[in-house]
Image 1: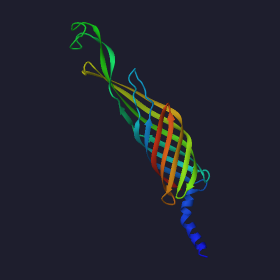
Image 2 (image 1 turned 180 degrees about the vertical axis):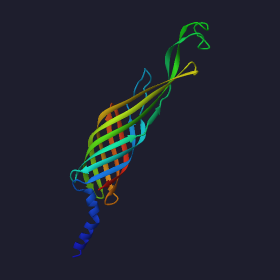
Image 3 (image 1 turned 30 degrees about the vertical axis):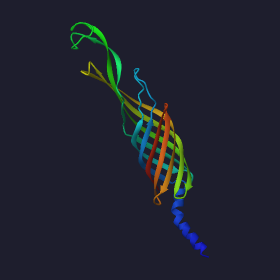
Image 4 (image 1 turned 90 degrees about the vertical axis):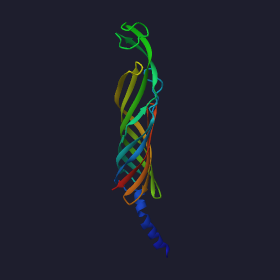
Length: 233
C-alpha cells in the first residue's frame, strides 16, 4: 500500500517539470539574452588588391516573444543586434600614376623641379572594414521533453540588415600625404534560419536556455551560440 503515497509524492514533485516540458496550448513566453556572432565572410578583392578577410566574432543581444501552438509546437519572433565588427587588414602597395607640377614634391624623378611630369610609384593602402547587423527571425519550433529540460529544434525565415563601411588609408609621397576614402552601404536580405534551444527549468516559470542560430548568405556563414533567460506565463 506504500506504492500509492509514493506515486502521489512523485507526481507532485515532478509536476512543475512536466508543466514546463509540455506547456499547454496558448502559453506565451518571452526571452532575452546575449550571443556571440561568429561570422565567416566570403573573401573579397577590391581594386585588384589581395583578398581581404572580413571574418571575425562579435557580441550581440536578442529579444524574443513566442507562443505554444500545441504541447510540442511553438512559434516565435526574435530580434537581434550585433556590435560593430572591425577588421584592419594588412597594408599593400598599389601602383599609382601621379602628376608632379611646380615643385609640389621636393624631388622630380623625371625632370627638373617646376617641370610638369608623370611618375609611377607605389601608394601603400591600409583598408579597414566595419560591419554590424540587425535581424528579425520568424521561427517554428518542435519540442522534445527530456527530464528537466526541453530540447527544441527550430527553423524559419529572417530579414537581415547589414550596415558596412570600408575605409582606405592611402599614403603617398613617402608618407607626406594621406588620402582617406570610405565607402558605406546598408543592405537587406532574406535568409533561411535554423537553430536549437535547450530550455532547462529553474522555477515553474523561468528557464535558462543555451541556444544557437545559424544562417548562410552570399557564400558566408553566421553561427550564433548564446544564452538566454525565458519566462513562461
